Image (cartoon, rainbow, N blue to C red; front, side, top):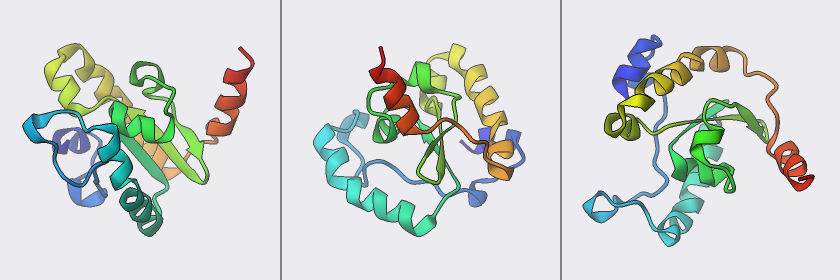
Length: 136
């Protein structure tokens, strides 16, 4: 994470980092849906207090918090509004360590962050996506 931030002129102290679950799952396993749900109110409160302009979701679990029907491979790199927050999904850095072909994609997505932080675009909203999806 620090390397990715450094490549775009940022440091860890410049960003607020949080997790979907507040307790680390044992054996580095994926969190269970019940664990994510149980921690949801804490995450909502953190977002409310921090009031970010941009949320970068790292991987499929945090993506599902905002766009539950999407896959990370299709959603990554596409900024969209959820309320007044720009949500920008990217692959999780750990996935890029396991699968080297994702490293360049992740770096390219991170290169867009300074622009999103300066002036978030008018991305498509979640509501628009849902309406469009229902047409098919």
